[in-house]
Image (cartoon, rainbow, N blue to C red; front, side, top):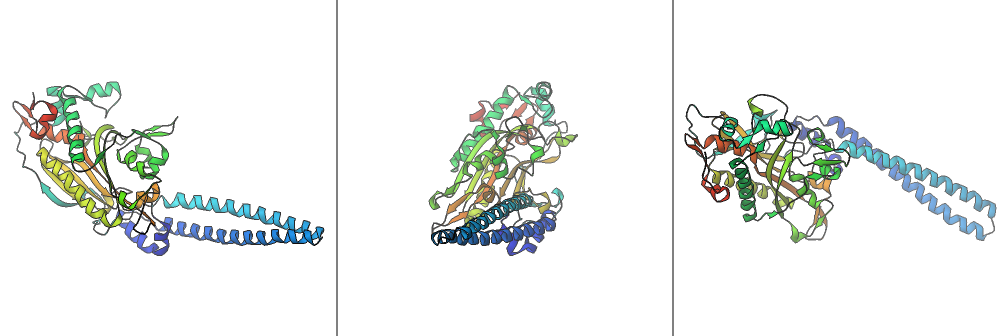
Length: 423
């Protein structure tokens, strides 16, 4: 979340920058500043009363020694009144602080200076394109028909067992899924990311720490009896490893990778955009997470983008990299690069990765800090990226590698799959 210091120092800057995200922050910013002024006034009044209470308490002993019992009893009553007043002020101060904190978390992260202005996906900036051109025969099939033809993913069976958006992977489809997960993890660990296997359910504090709560509460599956949330991405449990942690100077950076199934309640519309693997309620994803010093985080972001690009290139798929405009960015991100694969059979781009720098936004909520060279605690920068999300990677792999004789498996995956073709 944004810091109070940032709002105090230049509220107009915050309002102006958040407008790039199409977020009108003025009312919240002014409310937060008013509550902050009220809280500080209450603190000053409380400090004054506590000081008077100490002085009056000291007088009681002197009066008793002087034999002035009546005056001492009167002083005791005054101390009791001051204590009651102090208790009331502290309660009002706590209530004001709680109201302030509830307001400030409603403010999204400030976009960095190179984020383009825009209202939605149509305003995103294409920064790079790569990969081979894809030429398919006129009778090429979309992946949902290929899955049925080769009996590798069963969408109808998933509907029977659970509901729409929960496919069942079968035979070579299941092996391809497992192969991609292992390939992504191996590639990430070879690049210096430490593999972890986190829980796939998190508590409310974890959801708050990375910014899913309260912003995306409606998109998360919630086990109400235990108040646990199914993870929408491994970013949540992995980043929360560092919640309430102060890292030593030589412990930064931290680089971690994890595979988890992910759960999102967002699939709702109809048509080709959500058919097959295009949008699911449950899907597999491998994530990379970094904790960096502020001065190094943008170099780390560039490194993460290059790393994801290298994976896509190894798969031999046509791709493009987008820098998201303010209106298409997430609540918590300062800057995001999206990777999209070209689906020749569908004639559209499919998002398969987001790589983001959150700067201090998550770290402030997480109380994640490091000790600088002088031993002073400073907020870290956090970053994460999909490396990669599987459903649309699988969709593009199946569609772009289809032949009359079957679906050819990219060479890089064959040691993982144990086969070179789905037929």
